Image (cartoon, rainbow, N blue to C red; front, side, top):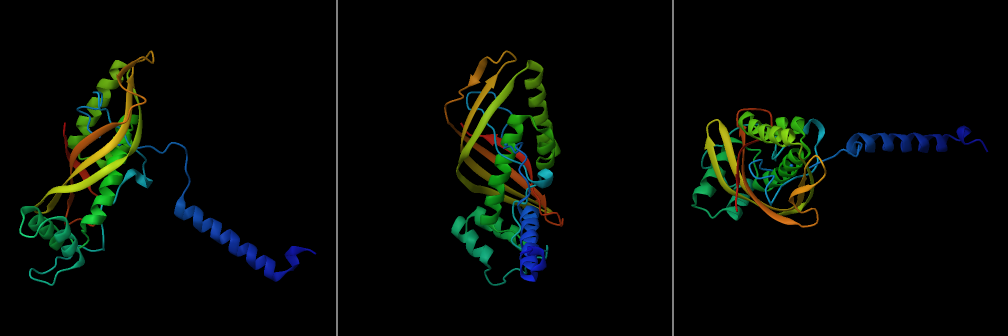
Length: 243
């Protein structure tokens, strides 16, 4: 029997092709060049750092629970975000107050969603630094922070050094501080991650790190965005390492 003379078969083939096309558009393609992210001031020390992969355009939406930038009036009933903030930071504390002020100015802000996005950004930045991927870094960092990372990469390249790193995972990520410097929102997060990193010279001699040892790395990073902007993406504006 010729399957193309069977209307039912033709319909099923059309549906199958449509599903494959939709899956491809949603999931995208893996090229084998996906990579991870860190703090350049100590990357080539014993606890080197690295990270993961980049998304389309190398931009991370750290939060955006909802669309729009309409402010909520003071004294309005507690929202889901308010309850999440109370669970994160004790009511009456400076952190709690700052986060609620941010949520009032930006209804899309929700701590849990922010942290998930922040972890993705952390991986991407650490990995991009390990790989010397300036393009990814430029899209995720403020100009000042990017200049610091780029200078560190230039020094590494001038020495003929290169890094091989594997991002094992993030053990914890927690918001430790927040501030609303109108119109800019600043949220500081403490990351504890597990990373394998080794630095080699041009002759492939190991000069730093350990290619077989997992190191615990603690970084304190501050992300920022303009509360007036429709752009939901945040950028890394400050880094600090915790020994």
